[in-house]
Length: 265
Image 1 (cartoon, rainbow, N blue to C red):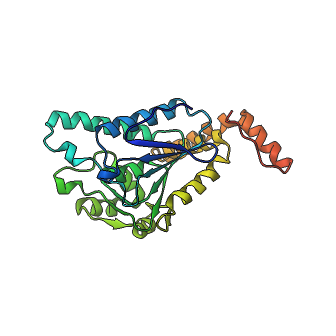
Image 2: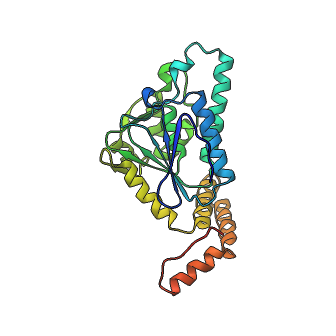
Image 3: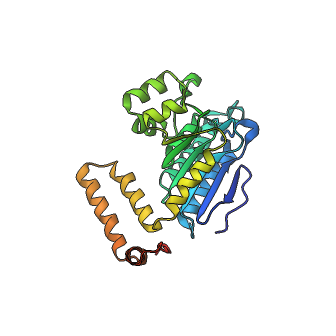
């Protein structure tokens, strides 16, 4: 698919059906400024509208020091209240577009993820982290609070009590703690996190793309409802796959003892 040349993002097709998106402002630890917010919103919206043959995205940061340091406080210094609110609305829309993206997104956290950087990782489907990564939602130290989903997504990942402690104390934590608490799925050795995330993404891309998207949707929206409603959402998602060409191909390939050739239809 054709995507723009962004100033703050680097896009690189990886293996078949995979895209690596790199937050690329290494001079400021990949902090999110207004342009990056607009470009992320544009990217996630385009991928939702027209993914073509793309089946999985890996999101990482430039360099080894930081995945993303959060909002760019140098740009924000001296902003009027109205300008701050307008900028934050862009960030909110970008976060929502990522959270609702039909494609699976794996965060490859190559370094520190603070504030909006951690919130961005939490909006992904799951997280691989370098052993030297550190995490924090420390906004209360600035007289504000997490505003791109952090109070909700962190609590869902690590539980209410721990999320309250981490946010209210502005407490940083490391990759091993994040793994124990369920925020991170896998800890990689330094320099290996992108490769490990791409290996996971390749597993996803080898599966039926329609099935993967329907399963993601069922989990995502089912967990926002009661069990009975979630089960109904699951069956609705399941039934949409029964008549697909991919379902027929998957069963045929199993019986013919060969790898399936999924086409996403």
